Image (cartoon, rainbow, N blue to C red; front, side, top):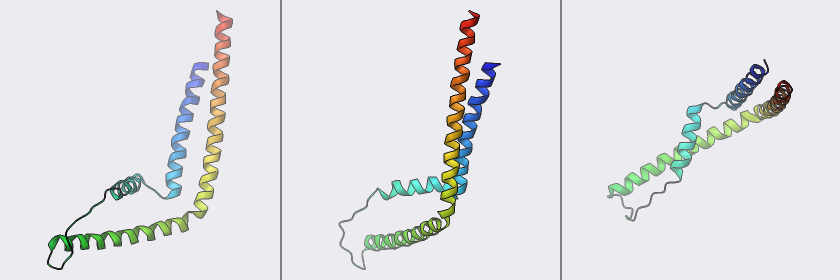
Length: 130
């Protein structure tokens, strides 16, 4: 009976942690694909590109680099606009998220304490039986 209670509490602890993570992503308006794209762009921005070719209108490489630079500049502006929009929307969400995380940590702490109490009782019962 005691072992079954301990395993149920452990499962609740794991499921509750997963629920906290899901609520965090949902309240932040993030899905896993966006997170992957964001980290991929961060890693990709660490890679640099340089060229020693002097720019002139007849040089194809210089024109390609200029086009790529313009494209990246437009993407950067779109990303900045999206970040500004998300920051403006997330004021209330951050407060709610903070309270959800605090309550979640408190409940996890209570479940851990219950786990230790049940382990102590089980050991005490095993000593009394032997």
